[in-house]
Length: 371
Length: 157
Image (tube, rainbow over all chains, first blue to last red; front, side, top):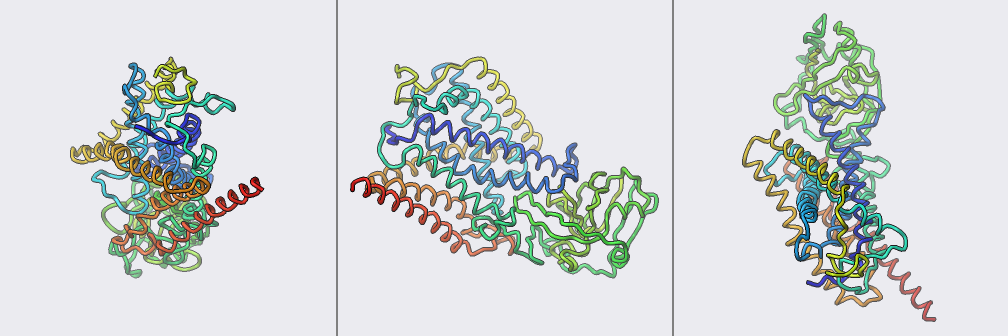
């Protein structure tokens, strides 16, 4: 079988492989952080400070994932002749090296496919995205570790200036040479970033032409993941509304009216809502500090809590660790940008705080269960 | 192939010896893969879901190797045959970039989030948005082509 190209050589594979090693490692680490942060019963949580940490880690996760698409396709294109190598392996070690390509390539393709499809709310698979994407990440990174072990010396040699390069293609045939091919692939990777990063990096929002979200589009000027209509909370009766603060961690259980909350000292803070799907929007939220409410209820200074929404079913509750609960900017927000919350943003009350994934910025809060 | 490691062509020649580093990394790598499999099995007791996950993992490999790669290689060969050599590089670059743009644009173009009735997901006119991005891509390719042709004519002069 012939593969005419002057580009398919060790250096092309080494450069693209090194770039993918970096993007996949960043994507893996930030993805594991996000997975663990979302785990309500888990042992790990991001501290509330420094503010903006989760905004950056999750923004990087999606950006490096999307930027990896052209890199991975180009890398596979560069080494495709090796698929037809005969005999398929020449030693036990070579067999082990090639065996690891199945989880590496399958896992990498599955990660990029499920990631891209998930942010576009298209899930044609039958497994849980969260579990499958997380498992595929470990499987792919394991394959990557084996591959790095196998290709370490080759990569170092191929990257050296003046190295003699082994080609895996058949013959030079004009068109793109290696330099212009790599320039194209990294350029495309850059363009992908330029036209998608605006979904989380606001200064580039007008350029977010290929992103499924815009941080400035939605009720009150920013996006929504879960609509009030999907949980039957389009019209909450303010007269009947109570915020309950109870649980074993309080000395004085409270049931506060909406007007009571309005009458309390208000605090404003710029806090991002960062969705696990990669979009992010920073707004000015105003409301009652969580720590003021906990003090009013006689909670201990180290008290943590569980935040419950008014609706039933999925994503009803979220954990609130002690450092998040007592952070100066952790709010039960009544207003955003000077207006009462829109129903889709959680009217009458929304929990907001730094370094919390969007699913933990609970909307339509009805109860703080203090531990 | 019997050639030296520095041979200019061929696959077997590119293999490097597998030393201690490889076996240490292979042990760590396969343990990591095992951890991923274990995490999935613990999170997913349902057999159908397990089978579906494996089908997508292996299927991703097969779809790439049996469908995507032959189609891309075929298109590349076609471009090599049809395009004059002087214009080939920038047009190939434009085709590669356009392919990637379409990979990203296909789901918004199909309005895959429409059933959520959430107007903040895929809020743009993605046909116009995609055309805008493709215009940028082909403007860059055209600039590359023109600069290349000008350089060549200057060299000939």
